[in-house]
Image (cartoon, rainbow, N blue to C red):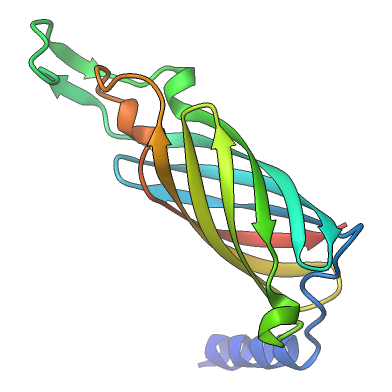
Length: 175
């Protein structure tokens, strides 16, 4: 019960003292969190730079830490895989991205909802995210990413790791 009361106090305090989520030109936001997807989970880090009132560009990188090993034959390949693990290039992805920051459009300055597009090492994709700032420097974020066009051929059992929908959540910082 003590933990529940403490949590409710912190949430209430955070909402009462919430700060502006996106200020526009010159704003810098850094997100660090968990990346969850089918067949693996890992970490995600991103940075976004404000270019205008509702526009930003940035970079995002994902690294898959936990993954499912593969056993068997993949897509009719005659070579069997035995407890295969993805290599670094299958586990890592980096992307450049652009965002439309909609906090001023939706009229809630503490919440930054940002749809956008990204161009990465494995695909061209889109994302929709949100950030909520409790103080001037600290907040939380969540983001869903999805591929639109995939690069390469589907002849590797780990091709899907960076070519699927992902869900991320974590901490956001204002620099």
